[in-house]
Length: 223
Ligand code: TMP
Image (cartoon, rainbow, N blue to C red; front, side, top):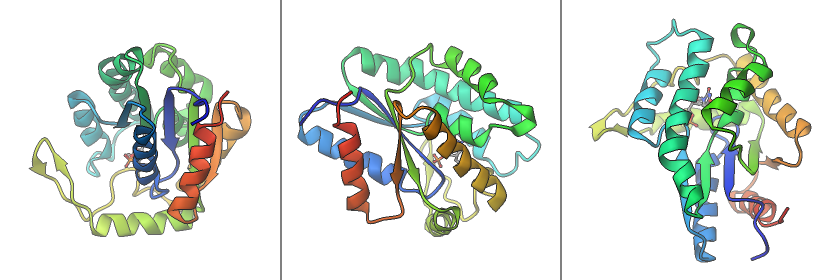
């Protein structure tokens, strides 16, 4: 295996783009090469983060203000940074995160006037300046990803603290309009264009193995 692009790798993109599957495939392949991997999801992973996740995604919380929403994602992330990511990086492990600040820069950008400067400033405090080395944006048309989300929710089984919270409804964010999700996709594409040294665009509307090979090439291409 050639040199890795870094020790902190993020998978991001719209719902149903295959992030979790691809994160798992990358984890397995890295482990086969003897790399010690921590694979986590944002928001969540820690006890406190999972509680914040439940507040954020609860479809009943329709009155939540966008600045509250942004800060709750950051709060969950701050806990995850302190409790899991930073200790893992300090121990020399490779961290794969399913979503990170790049999600906030796509989903909360523009809401209630939030600018990318506002979000980055809060993120800087949240993650104590440890930005990911590489963010892989899995991109596909919104119509395709939304049809995949439908399928996911029809079969969704989920637990929270051992309690069965299986749902047949979409979560609070997934329920938003097609226009909102088109804007989210556009915000991801703009992030890639603005910072090609730390971001890589991956066409995700293809066979799982083909997508994985592109990801592997991106991760092992060195600096
Ligand atoms: P997930 O289902 O991919 O784990 O993501 C949870 C939801 O939270 C998803 O709809 C995207 C949304 N989200 C944001 O709106 N902002 C964020 O910063 C993050 C991390 C997720």
